[in-house]
Length: 154
Image (cartoon, rainbow, N blue to C red):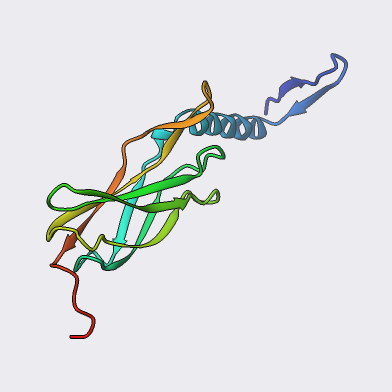
């Protein structure tokens, strides 16, 4: 089996690298460079439980396929009701381990009945001005508002 020759920082220092180690190192370096330079390459998904209920319902929003970026580590979740009114539901930190997030929140109390949409936007870091700016396309999940807030006493 052939071996590749790698040179260290000193011209006199030479060592052999097995083809398997070289291939693994190349694959990891390539994967990391793609992930860091192209956050839109991730395939994000969003879920909500429950998926229906009256306005004001507590919900658990969970996302996966997001990229943890130190400068922009959070995702912002919005709800757009059946009439097109959009409300921010909050922010959640993306896990650096597996690209997931969880958020406990409530559907807005004034949400119009009908099918609405939860959207999760992750900002993209722009190193030029050093800010979190543009968002890549959001993941979405439907939530059906079944009616106005229920009276808790009756």
